[in-house]
Length: 233
Image (tube, rainbow, N blue to C red; front, side):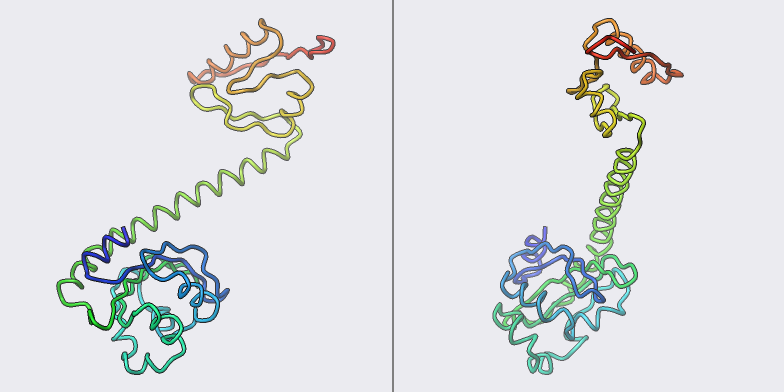
């Protein structure tokens, strides 16, 4: 997507990244045709630069042209330009914050060479038209990551319970089994591969009936499971 947008706007390339100014750390980046060595130099030494400092106060979704943040002639006097921009022939940039929370920002940069010059009016309109779509895409990605983190945290809590807990999907396939259940499986009381069962066909059938009833919205029920060694429930 980054390279396609770059081609549409006659740009050298683009990058989408998430970073914390306080921690001075880049948490993710998707590089579309920009120089990786220059990107490393940025992350190691130049996260604080004239462009990023200007963008700290800009609202989400607004296209900001680098020449409005700092004149090119002044930018060329900086070490940031010498080490990060000049080696990859970047002189102009279209910048946009896509999401922000506290000091963390996800942002989009589209870089142009000096030969190409600043973005013209049509190219600016194209980037402004893309703005809400890019913001929604990043926000959706954050939500998915958040849901996964909640899911992993919930499973971590379940793993600490002394009671055995198994999470199944709607086809009765095992999604998660906590440590207590895994111990029961090691002792032979349960069998878990993709589905659940016991070494006793009769008890396996009863267990599957209970699971099937729960999947259909029933009240559930209880049963005893025989131990493999002595048959005790």
